[in-house]
Length: 297
Image (cartoon, one colour):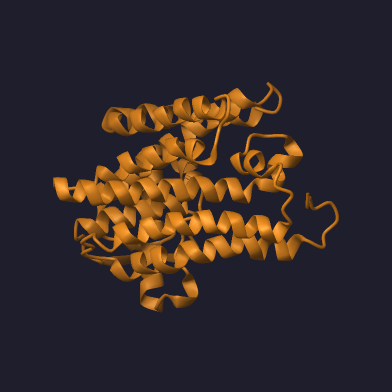
């Protein structure tokens, strides 16, 4: 998970934003309870989105309770009082994703560059062992992502769709786990597949300049290497690909029966995705373009 799945706060009612934070803090609390205090550091917006979707589909009540913050005892936070099962699933996905991300970092870096990942993996190994007992299917799905991603990137002529496929397939399988019948499986599969593809493309777009500097793999760098595009043209090209993906996400989402947290999920899908594209592809560059050392090939 990469942290791109966020609602657009300016268009959320205060009560809905407080409700969103209650799920975010509820997931943080669940991570600490299930896997230890350090596991709270793995909390992500993407897994909060997954928890919201799971609870929304299963009609969990929007009840909240105010308690002391688990990280700052000097303040109180709102916590979601329902959805324990959904929060446990989201927390398992969180720690398993982190474990396999650390494995990937260790594999891709030299011994000294991978020291931090090797150290963190000592803790993540314990998290994974516990999550594996309760959610072996989730572990299998996320493990397959790393294997298939490596194969896609090492193919003779990798293209954007081919490289996005493993993340898309992983998210499809994770979202299908929330389905209650065959019809829901079809709709949720479509939604999860294109949401996973969007997340992968966003991450590649966000890392474009960094990957050029470090000579790291990036499908957009390969795809656009010989097109001689300006920064604006490149951003517009990538934005067009993302918009096509978002149209499939929205189409599937509109067929879903969201029973609770609908205002938040509506905002995230219909506004949050587009605003994140704007932030990464256009606002970020405008902010940095005058700084010394920015790459603009």
